[in-house]
Every structure is written in structure tokens, then in C-alpha cells.
Length: 402
Image (cartoon, rainbow, N blue to C red; front, side, top):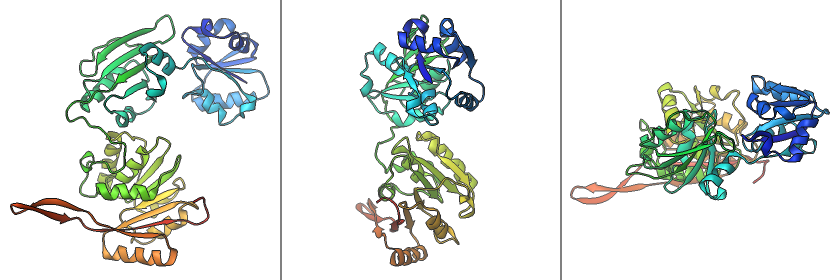
């Protein structure tokens, strides 16, 4: 099987090897646009991708052992079909011939070192994913879904305090219809944007811009909450105890405002989290917080543990910030946690603290008392006002990697 990347310049931009792979194929798969671009070189049967896309993957796999060519946009292994097929086909059975990606073309047009830019895709994904990357001076390359995408990005930036950011709208890169235009986010007025576009952003923050820090322990005022919020200092120490690792899944039981799951996901794009919350109004609030803080993929399960835990993806880490003393909750967490997984439980009541002391005595782990005090006015002077102390038990389930 050959996987050939093709650009908007069609056959003119292909190497002799890429063109030969298309001409020799019994079946050539591709989107309607790809097949049109490569049309003169297709000697076998042209097969447009069906809907749903997964059906097309099945059709490709059914032709295993025959000479098949799959067309893709630019680099097939950058958010492309090559990455999808590689999950099913060994590398030794594939020959990939990439073309320049849209990110490479955009960087070359803008004169931006590609290694120093951040590239994202919101093609078929929530636009909120951009929010976590809005830092002054940062350069973003964002692949959109359609002609409305650049204007929607401009509105998001302006509403978030980044209206002075410069947007470069790059359309139909690499082909005869290529066009590049520039506008600020606040004054964005570009019309008739080609559906095939990428937006370069030079991020500029105005006063009061909503900048999401890179470390755990985000300011409390970034969250919408009803008082059920793991406070900033405790949250940072809790994330440190949970110790996220690439590709892992977290269960946040009794999620409250969703802060632990949100900051878990912010640590790395590969991380996933499931927030379990019994109260519908809090579940809705978690969704809003997740979107506004750039992790719209946070999964929310409305229901009470342990019943609501049934059928969820097995967790690599579990946090219980409330309800650890409820019947069956801690037992369910202990039993479902993967070997080598981390469990962290925070307690503020004496009853739950006693439970954690007992678990520490029988299972080990670490037991820590966390206390925070803030300076505040006392009459005409200043004194320390202590917050409620938190007892934290953290434990690693035996049997896995340390």
C-alpha cells in the first residue's frame, strides 16, 4: 500500500516516485478533491472515501495484499489518514510519500521557524482548544474546518482579551488559488475566506486578558464555582501527588467545579479525564469551566459513585475530593484502579480523616496534613486567616511500574 501526500498544486508538485505509485495502483482512495487533483495519473479504479470515514478504512484493509494507493493532504502522518491506517497496518506494509504539510507551507510563507511555532487543528474539533495556548508573544498555526473558522477565532481572541493579536489568513496554500491576508482579531473583517485555510496568530494580550498559566494551581478566580472548589495551593499539591504521565486516564470522583480534571488535562494533550458529579447544575458548570480553560474534551458523567463508575475506561489515577466516606466509593476506587495506578484522597472532616488514617495503617502510602493561611485585615492591622486543613492520603496500587 502506498500513501501519497498531494498538495493544491496537484500532479505538478509530486515527485516521480509519488506519481508512479498512483499510476501503478489497482485502486486509488481519496477525497473528491484529492482524486480530482490526481485525476490524470489514476489508471486504476478511483474510490472516493465513503461516509462514515471508518467504512473507508475497512475497505482499504479488505484489499490487503493488492496494489492500493491512498491519497492524503500534505503530510499523511500529521493529523492525516496515514496515522489512522498505521493503527491497523504494520509500517513494513506501507510506503508513504509525503508532501509539505499545510503547517510547513504556512511557516515558509510567514517566515516563522516551524520548531518555534505551536501548531493546532480545530478541524472538526472545538475551537476552545485554542484557549490554553494564548500566551503573549506566542505564534500559533491553526488549521480550521471552513471559511467561517478565521472569523470565529478572531471573536474568541477578542472576547478573551487578545483583540490586538495579528491574524494571518492563509488560503488554499500551494495552489493557484493561494491567498494571504492579515487583520487584527478585534478589527477582523475579511470576507469570502476559502474553506481550505490555516490561520497564523501572533498572540498579543490586552489588559485583563484571560491567560491560562502553564503550571498546576490555576488562580481560583479562573473557575466558576459554588464554593465546591479544591483551592489553588491544595490543587497544585494534589496534581503533584497524582503525577500525570503521558496518555493516562484520570477519574475525578465528586468533581465539584472540575478543577482537578481540567488541570490534569492541561498538563499534556495526551491526557484524558472523567469527572463524576452527582448534581446536574455542577456537571453543567464543569462543562463551562472545561471549555473556558481550553479542555472541552473533559468527559462528564452525571451520577453518584460507585454506580456511575460502571463502564468507564479503566483509570490510571483516581482523585476523590468528596464522598470518600460514602458507602462503596473508596472500595470501588481501590478495586478498579490499574496496577501501578495512583489514588489520592483529600479529606476535611474528622470522619473521612479517620477513614484515611485507617487505610494508611493497613495499606501504606503517604499521609500528609496540608494547611494554608492567608494574610487578611484584622481590625486596622493584618493577620493570618487559616483555611480548613486538608488530610491527603496518596497510594500506589501494587503490581505495576513505579
